[in-house]
Length: 159
Image 1 (tube, rainbow, N blue to C red):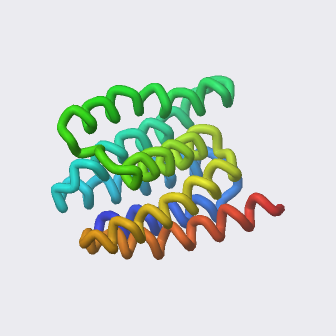
Image 2 (cartoon, one colour):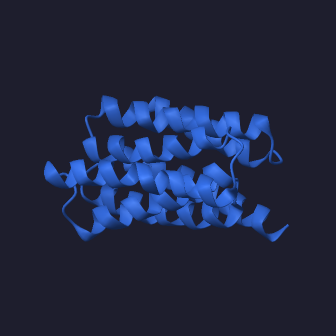
């Protein structure tokens, strides 16, 4: 759980910076933390979904149009979601909601779009509560950190 907390702390620091190389780097490094936590906790759904998030943080470093940058996480999501469905890891409406939440977040990382980051963070917060209620303890930490993330993204959106 500690890597996830550290990762979210880096991500929160990234939201405090203006759009810059440093912000993109903090978002990328921050996304690695929850990925490691999902791996250590053997939570295949979260691990697969983190691949989508990581794709958005990597694309942010490339010079492309915002539309293409936002599209890449969706293109990564297709095979990831197919594999999850094939292995019956992705079978409920909650899982669908979780995937869509992370797609929004990933598109925000890719484009540094505060609206995507706000909506994605808010949706991930809701999904985290659902996962926590189902017994996945680290999701409670992710809820709290994503709620802070959502508030910071909302403040940036209003600037």
